[in-house]
Every structure is written in structure tokens, then in C-alpha cells.
Length: 170
Image 1: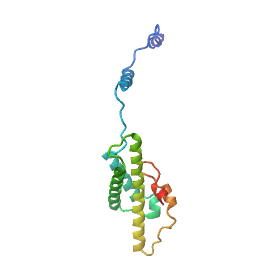
Image 2: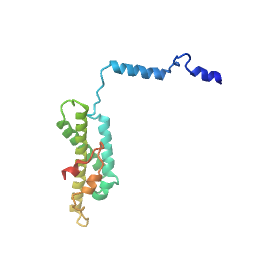
Image 3: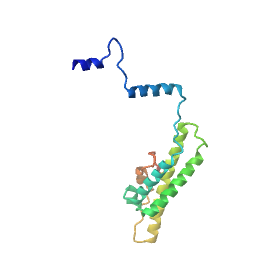
Image 4: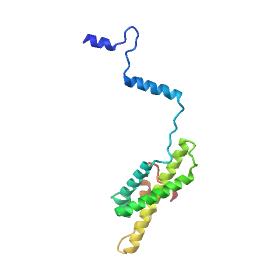
């Protein structure tokens, strides 16, 4: 046992041999100092990310949630159509508001925030319009309270984690 412990200790000020992982980490760190810095692209989101946003919108619009308790749920097909429209419109609006090429990560983050706010606002408009059309077609149904929706808007999650713009524009 004493021999094992001695093998791992540095002898005479020498460093113990490094593992392949340690060597790989050093070469990456050394290369980073030589190579130009890599830019982080936040905008535009990948197609995979956009599809994930659409799927989350479909889930939010077609299942029980804070939003559906107040305004009702959409059928899966209506939710899918609405989610695609909401995402496409939000993407177009955010893209139009950004520079042709995001000059910095901060520009990309600002554009991503616009995208998120647009999704939240359009989602809320969609469910309010649906609730309004349902209440007009069935007089026995009580329309949602007209308190401006501040409670629901503040509790409304956004696709990218930002605040809901609906509460600031109401």
C-alpha cells in the first residue's frame, strides 16, 4: 500500500503525469488564447428552438393552465394553428426590429426579448378573442371579468423567460 501512495506523490519537485483529460483541457485553454474569440449568437433562434416554442404554445393553449381557467382551452388543432401563427408573427416582428446582423450579444438578447414579449402578447390576444367569441355565441356563459386581466397577465409565463409585455402595455 505504501508503494501505491508513493507512486502518486510528486518526487523531487516533479509533477505527477497528467491524464489525457487534463492534457486536453490544457490544449483547449492554450488554443483559446491563440484563436480569435468565438461570438455567441442569440438571434435568430434555430429552427429546432422555434419548433420547441410552438410545441410549448400548443401545450399552453390546449391544456389546463392559469390561462385556460380564465379564458378556456383551445382544441389541439386550433391550438396548433394559433401557435404557428403566433410564433411566425412574433418572429417576423422581432426580426424586423433588429439590425440585419446582430452586432453584439446584447443586440441579440434585446431581439430575443422582443420575440418573447410578442409571443406573450399574441397568445393573450388569441385566448381573449376566443373567449369573447364563445361568450357572444352562448349567452348562458358568463364572460370573463373585465378587470384588465392584470392578475393573469402578470402570472403568464413567456417563451424565453422574460416578463409579459401585456402587463406593461395594458
